[in-house]
Length: 168
Image (cartoon, rainbow, N blue to C red; front, side):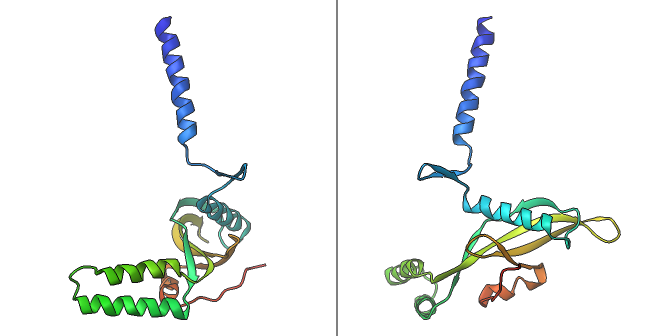
């Protein structure tokens, strides 16, 4: 009888600790708010369920949310200076000057354009067969789906600023 009570108490204790360490919504100003990752995933799921282009949508996995910034003249200047200093160094390690330039670049990211997230999902094709697809979703600053790029279009956003408008 005593071992049964001990095991129940231990189970309750583990459950309480498990819930306290779960990564859930963040408490901010006394209110619970979902993380950026959760907001992005929820926005994509609701957009996909509402969109008729993706029949029988089933989410598989989401990547990490990444912020996208517009490159300004200052950020381009800093990137050029870093590359120049690293080439002068001959790849022998980082100098203090390169490290300080990288810190300055991190502090001057530019204007926030929105967020990007990779998402792998399953849909049904015209033949009724399930097909797995991975797309890159561009979200605006309010976490609304602005554009969806297939794998062939990924390269467009790596070095260029992609202009997009929110779908109505």
